[in-house]
Image (cartoon, rainbow, N blue to C red):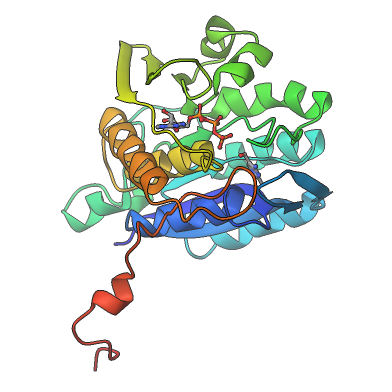
Length: 286
Ligand SMILES: Nc1ncnc2c1ncn2[C@@H]1O[C@H](COP(=O)(O)OP(=O)(O)OP(=O)(O)O)[C@@H](O)[C@H]1O
Ligand SMILES: Cc1ncc(CO)c(N)n1
């Protein structure tokens, strides 16, 4: 079965970050993206010109519509829109996908096909929380009250993926770990020719170090990474393998950036290919 990833995030009209990056990433990695849109931003490569938070009850209705029919193998949370929505989403995810109880951390949809437990035995759906605060352009995407409410989301998250300024705003690595989740500290904002992303879990620490790709078109790397990880977990990959593939995908998409806009442009999620055009027979299956 195709892995189903519920994306709870904001819309970026420029198509570089947010829901737009998330859908492209999930699709490219072989999953099915469903969405609960938390905010609409008027945004381009230069900055964020306007933000319209979606009412909290409409965010919850989108989650309920998806969970009640299509189903969910993993959740990715990005821009959340308001403190009220952060708290309400934490409550709703807790009741839909209980965080307590024994059994495996999650049982992906694929396990059912292979004669395993199947989706009715899911114990814990993985939740990846990207604590979005500021866009690549420098525009603010979360006010102080919303950032304070992030604690609720961190308590139910499997993995939190702060960049370095976000980690500092959350009180540092120990403060995040104390709330329970694994932490992937992204190194994109550090100086230097190498970038190190650092995963800290109960089992210890793993690092990925790669050469920095020289480009100003790195808008949406954080969204892409978190959605890529969520897709891997939904597909049944172990956490470190899901992270490794997501980093590789971010790097490939950076290398294929189309060079749009006068500021921080979008990545090239389609990697310069059209899978449809490459099909030998472009007819519908009979
Ligand atoms: N110039 C780059 N070259 C290669 N990898 C990069 C580059 N910039 C970021 N990355 C990678 O992209 C991922 C996201 O890191 P980053 O620290 O940029 O997150 P972020 O600040 O949340 O992203 P965003 O700019 O979307 O808000 C990490 O895996 C990081 O290693
Ligand atoms: C909607 C949205 N979500 C996240 C980010 C983070 O890059 C952004 N710029 N816009």
